[in-house]
Amino acid sequence: MNSSEVLTRRVRSAAGAGWWTVLIVAIWMTIAWFVWLAILNAKPEWLLRLWGGGDLDWSAVRNIVLWFFAVFKLMLFTVVIVVIWLTLWASRLKRVG
Image (cartoon, one colour):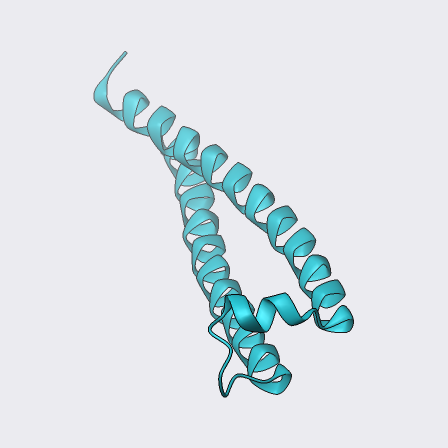
């Protein structure tokens, strides 16, 4: 096995692992989003106390949760772009080799 075949194999393995990671994170985010929707709908008092109480109200909690998921989706989007690039690179390496 020459170095080109080894590189092709490694890139394909990285792309496959990346797609599995994207799938797992997308499932986790979907479940977490529904859990947060249920929590925000129920508005339990213990959550405000757990997060420090004081001046924290439910509009601030909604804002924090929204920002968390927005940033997490941007990070997931970045991973998807990298995995697409790895997949395309692997297919190019296969064609060239």
